[in-house]
Image: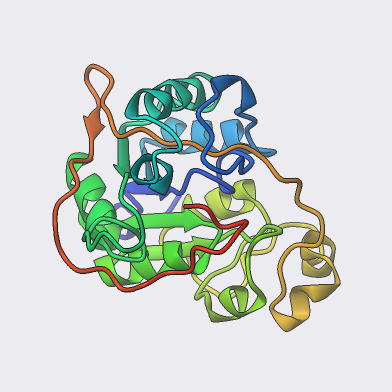
Length: 242
């Protein structure tokens, strides 16, 4: 563990594609499938007194594809399987709604950090696409990219820190804010990512999976209330439904 003055206080995870396999606009709790190592990674952070939260875009609400209730039910299932999480922050807006919470804007990261009494500089955002990393940077937090099959090569190449999986990311975080371009475990990085790793490509074989989020609050837990503001256009192509 790092000295007290150089210690991460909270880790804020993206949901879909990071903690659980991405199912576009999922409203069914039965489809929630954690990624390998997710429960252990979150448990490790909690054992070391590090706060844990979720920051996620859920444009399916704005599109009318899922309801707030659907999101809450799926979130509760994620809490059951992986959590509990200290804070949930959700943006229900679409890409053209002009909100300040939708990643890559920093609103959710800043709000969630405040809810766990941590400054952004003491937080790490872990996600699977460039918008997660940009939101972290804009908020003044650290970011670790854990690529999967929807992560673009240019996003991997641009990320300040890259880890092959959640457990590797978390083990690095326990030593303080991330250092180094690639956070590798005992496996060669080529084995972790596949042949595209050395050119900044995504992991070769990550299965698809569930997606969901909660615009609501369970008792004793925080929930993000979105606000108005500007947001730059982000990619909303098929396969990247957030």
